[in-house]
Amino acid sequence: MHPTRAALVHLSERSSSRIAWFDYAKGICIILVVMMHSTLGVGEAYAEQGLGDFGFMHHVVAYAKPFRMPDFFLLSGLFLSLAIGRTWTHYLDKKVVHFAYFYVIWTVIQATIKTAATSGLDINELVSQFVTALVHPFPTLWFIYVLPLFFVATKLLRDVPAWALLASAALLQILPVQTGWYTLDHFIAPYYVFFLAGYLLAPHVFAIANWASYNTPLALSGLAGWAVLNGVLAYTTSPFARWDVASDLPFISLALGGMGGIAIVTLASQLSKFDMARFVRFCGQNSIVIYISFAIPMAVTRVVLLKTGVITDVGIASGVVWLVALISPLVAYMVVRQTPLNLLYERPAWVGVHDDRKPAHAPHAHPVRSFLSTSRNAGYGNG
Image (cartoon, rainbow, N blue to C red):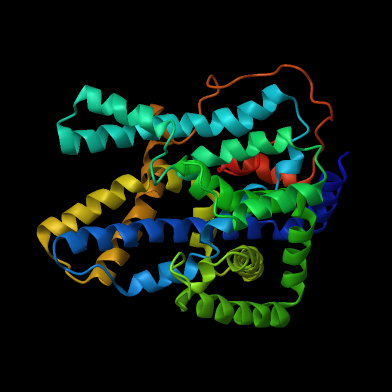
């Protein structure tokens, strides 16, 4: 057994009662992602109407920027060691086809709605948008576009020494990559190092979560110190024109991303220990449901607020749009899950590539595998 996999299984068995922290951490991330899109979208739309472009929620979005996506990718790589040794057929089915299915379905849905609203459902425009989205993903779907690329790249590079792989990815994050492909420059280069960290350092992440659950006073003290440092750097203007704030600077953004990922894991461990925010955990369990479909209720609510004029304050409007965008996908999923429309949120068994051969290692009944088999969010760790 691969040493990283063995250590992960060992640590997860020791902390099986606290595996819920993983869902809490994902819940925090998806809530922040929806908040960011909702708030920035409202700011842009209200600015066009001369109602202002900044509200109190923009401060929260700015604060979360250094760690929001780094932590999401850290969590996405956390259980990869359980799957990376499987056959390519099995691996591609779970790590590529799974996300490609949702990406294609929801790209078509979003492109259709967008085209209908702007061009009267012009077929040529619809096809053009879809083809473009195969290279340049929609802003609200880029995460599940990039994630399969990370899975494939990591399996291809699995024999490279861990230190060399992490160092190269860190260098990619630090350097100003300018290839002309927006996805590589703005999504792959900045975040691959955090995905790799989740994969390669998984036993240490589990150990930190385990330690935090037994050392609440120290864990909270560390969180307080991180919260202050993150805030100072996130709100301090950069001395260089190329970067807006200090948290965006090379090396600093890398360090803050890593620290923020650990901070969210620590916070999630505390939430799990006291089970204080079950809705956050529920969001984490259904994070892919929220992610793939929040854009539609978000856009509709924003348009309704603008058309009716019932809320003119950017901050309050952002909060309303955020909550509707966050809750609506969960409600929709509950409504359709027992109907044929559940294919919008759950990949049908007939979609994929199947390998009837037995795995190289017979699966064992341990807490991680049990958790992954029961989690509704099949995308973040099914081996």
